[in-house]
Length: 90
Image 1 (cartoon, helix red, strand yellow):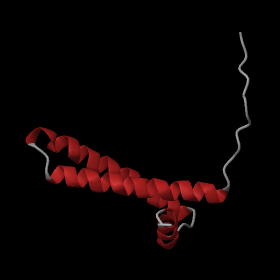
Image 2: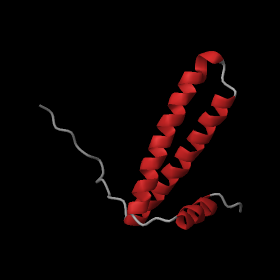
Image 3: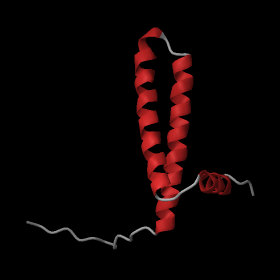
């Protein structure tokens, strides 16, 4: 058997990086839910069930991530602050 060599060490993320990643996942999931809802509103007959599934899945994912954030002590203010910092112009 051949062994595999790792080129570089895997570096663990800091707690702050983990929080930022969780917040970004929440924001992404919220966008996905909004998109699925908009698509559902204009869906043709054949796609209604598909978008209902997407909406339910997106809500479940978002609920999970929000609960995880609450357990880590991340507040909505922290989420908004990071969102605005990442989307600043200039």
